[in-house]
Length: 306
Image (tube, rainbow, N blue to C red; front, side, top):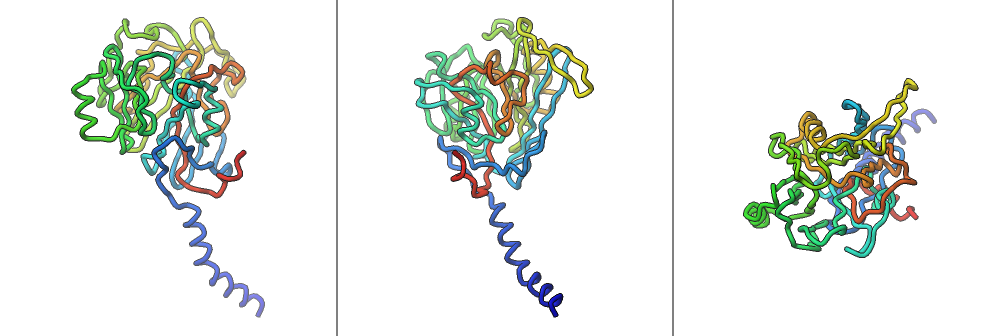
């Protein structure tokens, strides 16, 4: 009788368990504002992946010549999960990438374009316009309400106006240069700012397809090489790369759009509050902003985070 009763109880509980599971995995778009994403479920992290019903992140480390590339491949369920965050009030505060990422519950994060480091640029973050001074010598990256990328060479005014009439500008970045536009590998001008032909730490952001992205941080530099220890114990120095090499890598990953973000001392990748790249937290540069992805599922952990 006890065995029969247990079976009957289990059958009765199945719908309740299914409802609970469905509730736990409910995907709700995040607000388009400066608020953080939900706290991700720690149980969903492995050393190189994060997965829930709203987001999949797969991490990888690869060598391209003498440059060590940290790669994050991200798929999301809703465009609102592609987010940016400021360190504080615009123009008044900077902070470490790892700290900004932690404060905003980032599953994966990289630095942005250090938008407060200069006077110019059309700066939009999470739908809020902070500055509207396009720089004609820079390429511009725009993310829209669908999570799609639009890259404007030389901040093309006509294309910008057309985009503003057709889409909502969620984020606008002003670093560059463009690496891939509409599936076409871009020629990198040696006259572009930020030492494009030098061996430097680099940072890139690309879109492969609808709600699918690639983030890359390249370790080291010619004047600041980083020693990387492979799983087999062998060691090799990473000396950074040229922007041309970075562009080719993003193209090879299948990016339809790809863009160079702030590298150098700002090149850092944070995965689940851990430093995935080889730059030490102690050597982090304080910056004004980050790009990050968050889960769209409320696991009931938001109020527990200090």
